Image 1: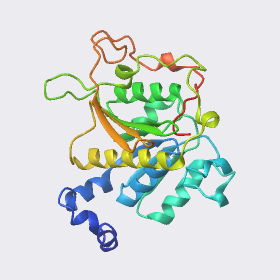
Image 2: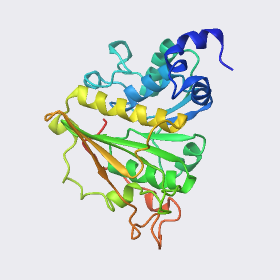
Image 3: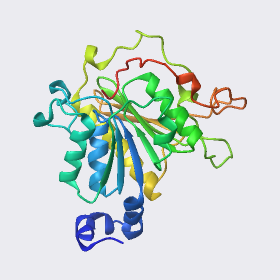
Length: 277
């Protein structure tokens, strides 16, 4: 049940027909894991906490640095040098004390991914490297967890939802990350944001879209992004949605899968990507 203070706090949700009391109760009961407390993780954490998601998990092994603050708004100057998960937890406590925050000051890897991911209902990937993205996607498929994914470039961003353990209306499974990108690009072919830069507000837009998709999945509101890739072009001021399909040849969820556990990720070093760092 919602307390009187929660009813006052969430009243704009409670009068929203598509959410209402039932939806707010779903939010309060939900457990969401955010992978990365950086550029994408910042608006994710803040909007999910503000919305009243009952339990937020956050995993990150980095510390706050001064050059993070141009885009990672869950942190501030006073927390430079602090582990990002601790800084984020303090911010969320100030924003909404009704939210329980579970922190993992560690890197997600083949040894811990299934255990950690299995504790949550929905996973939001805000990681900044290809190795983690493939690991997260594979682990979510094996654990049958819905994954809300986003990535950004200097002036663009991408959001989608992966739930390949569910089939569409035609009986075909929804795609995984490997259906769109079967393999990571060769090292050195994609510049990272420390080299080419990123407009901070672009990361905020994309992370906020990611938060909205997570809230939709929890409350069952609207049309899921599963099977669609939402593309944001900040320079052109445009959004575009393109269909993405299940690839029966993909190595994870295809007709003849060869990935049945996370052993292929053991000992893999992260390859930088211009994403949410």
